[in-house]
Length: 553
Image (tube, rainbow, N blue to C red; front, top):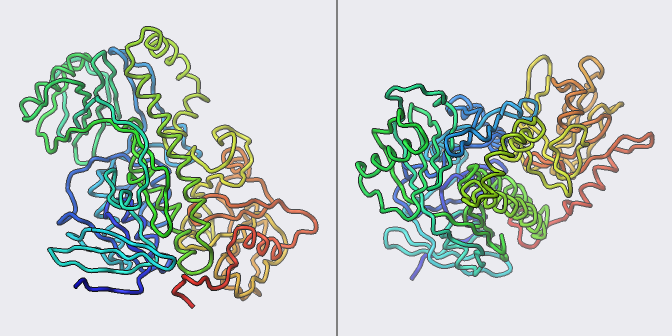
């Protein structure tokens, strides 16, 4: 007879970076959650290795961004070659005014260890060698049947989230189609030491390089600790089963791209994979949700996989927390699906087009790729738009034009960066103030005393008064409102805030816990801040008293 445990809030299936990030956020928000993982221990191999600026920026909310920046290798250039000639250079220094100007090279297993330590420190429950067998859900809960070393138990949760990868068992159990295709092309992924044996090398091995040939491509990317990730398209060639076979294949491919002076040796890990592009029809059904590769997989071009998954977790966590606490209804999950599925679909389409364009042997496409792309890539606005999209900083939830160019005003759905604030002479990252499931209401350049936010609103919002510039505002020590902070100003100039971030004061910014703008209200002579906050909460379905499914008072 299976054992039955009642009354828990969230079960996460899969202890990869997506499940662990989601678990850390839920624990930060005060939600009890467990993570189960079918493997005996964390895997030491890393299929993913690149963290984009937007992902590291989000991890600042968990206090992990600074550690990653110091521990990862930083790559600020990625060059693509066609038949030995450079055709495109991604220059991430264009991101200087928007975020981190580089891609962070950081093996997945090291990120998982960092997130696991944080999850456990937050009081999370992590169980290895535990596998989901079946699940049943009703209007009030999800019942999961779990197996651990032959012992079967049944546990009841308010919600279950499948972060269990491309072969998601959770996705199969809820019957969500995974629509797309699997390509016949195969590629090898391997980590080892890459060095020069002589020759007139012009490549900087601390940067990224991708070589396109008639037989596929080869990618070289630095890893921490003096290693390199090498990805080789092998098409229909015979399997390279041994290290000797692999070294022979790599040597041949390096000769093809005029890099015979490079030697790849001391191979730590080899894996073979095929190219697949799929997206789930539904990101949730009832009380069961999906995140990460469980709901989208695509070409490895641009390295979006792990980044999209972690960004899924940040989008979902605060919404799941509000629903668990009874502060909102399950209709909020629809915005999770709409926002994240839209981004995943765009990325899937773009990476598919890039992969086909870069590897095409069609004479017209080859001519455009080899002659026109180099000319366009030299134009700064074009290159900047490319790296904004590559880095994730250009992804937002706005309709219409994306904010890649100057003088586009911030609006609902816009990303707001981790801007630096100055308080009493000390720098504070804006994202340090987003460590809860509350909205942050920033009164930028507003005059007068802060609104006296009533108690029932304080569980939903924090208020931050930010001066237009240093010395142009005075604190209000008479305020006894604990959700109010004063005497802040942005370290960036008003011109930079306007040009690169679209922020024009005076205004009120309603910032979501995942660093996106939920609403913007420009100041008017008859502005009533308290009324606007109340209207905002009602409009966003936040002021809902005691949902029946909530376990909280």
